[in-house]
Image (cartoon, rainbow, N blue to C red; front, side, top):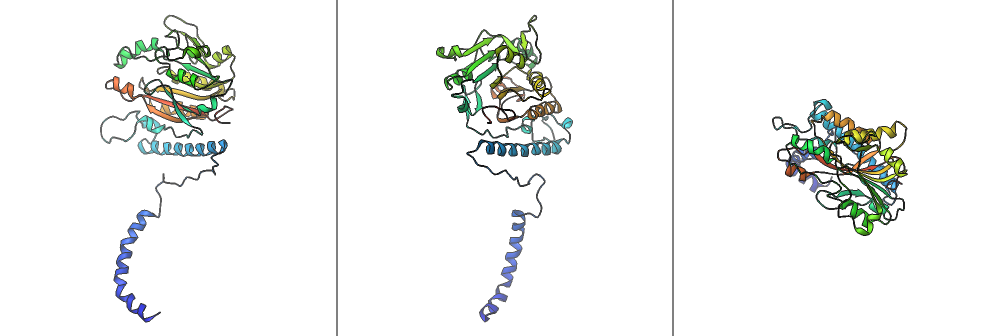
Length: 343
């Protein structure tokens, strides 16, 4: 070793030791020896963004990671689903979640995402509308609100009596979709109205069909205040349809039985859902329990439905007084079967 270095080293040894003591804790915090259980590197499949199959594979990998995160959050605050509240009470220990935190829109739409219809209440977020622009057999079903039932339910919820935005009051989604596609046809169902609202352009009304029926999990004729009800399978048979590109549903809390029945009717025959996207408003009224909601949601996932967009209905929160954020809009992509959005 050169003499100059021999002289310098002892003189600065104490400074080197001082720096070592300072840097070691910093190194530990930046590169810990062990990772927290949830901080596991995510290995995504190779992605060619020009290839739809690769985009779908990556989106599914990310969604599976979200499912593991859900399990972790349940264990953290539960540890069992039956231990969890939909909306925890405002008291110690104030767990930092609501039901919606367990069900994020964690699937990446493999196409462009755009708002179809008005901002505020009425419009919906759609994945890959461009795939429908020139699709000659494009089919859309729009199921409106059951205001005949809401007239009885709203007073029980302590809400204002004229809360209703059905097909007859708000058809901006349908109107916007028609003017942005060349061949799509829309079938509308709402037992409380006589037809679509004024947002449907006159020149496009020939591409719409309307009936005062509602979507349900059973076929049932009208009786008293109850309207005619049909399952999705029956409606499709009546219309001669083999597929639906977009199914939009807002049935004020009846979506749990309706959607579960729809899924069961196809899965028990080992058939994929005959739709490309489901645009759904979810209402967790009637003291819904977390474990019930989780099981219902897992049924959607088992059928291949993946949420790619969500937003709480803050219009409802604003006008409903002390009500909790019990309404949320979700847009789902069907990842099973053969539809224009995934193949």
